[in-house]
Image 1 (cartoon, one colour):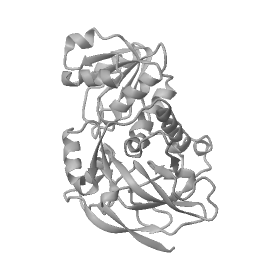
Image 2 (image 1 turned 135 degrees about the vertical axis):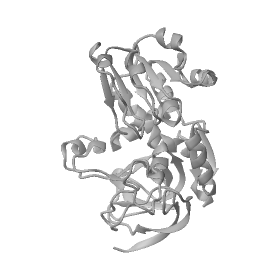
Image 3 (image 1 turned 90 degrees about the vertical axis):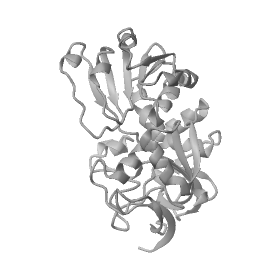
Length: 348
């Protein structure tokens, strides 16, 4: 297959910084869209993969899965996009398209394994796929999203991962008027969960280790803030229908299982490296569930983009030139960001 070269930022080892390099992209197939990348968000998953925290990273790796850009070319059979339109790519760039989950629009649960935008086997070029820390990308139109005109392209980028990752469980567990929804953690995912749950009409309680974030939590849409290190506040907290756990660091899930109503669910969307220990009595006492949720399918990702546009929701971002990616990664590892870094890829 013919290819072209584009500039990118990646690394050859977990101990090395990210540096500029050239990577191949495939020439367009009939249903392909080529996108000039304008902005790419930085997620904790990018950091985990770069550091090989979960194992399985193949180097060199070029991360990035919150991609917004402009269509520069389209294949001969493309019907969904035109040159010049603003478009986006999230985590999923392909799937089997035939299993029950792909057919129902839940490609994130593809039985035969969906293709991740980076560090995933590239069935067209061989080797591994390269992500959005780059100038250009090619993907099948069926896995490309539209950015509504009402959304700012830079602050829309994190919706493609952080936004859909919290929207999917909030929708599945029917967050809305009359429901009490807890949000554990106030980072990239957590701040979007607050905004989206509040827009759905739920009463939102934020659990945070820092009382300094209380004012910000309420600005984002929370009704209540509970400092999780304050035992009195935890004991006095109203029982929740649903708690969305966005924390990627090691933490005690049992403390939050205790705060669920009967039939309530603690839903993991953060990805701690170490397993969480769960006491059986914290679940069986109220028919409670410890659950998980994994991003969303293509249709649902478009749905959350449209939802955010309708409700005027955007990620709170710090926009940095692409050349400062290592600074962003170091600060992200320390939790020094409110609330999502986005790279300006036009400055690469």
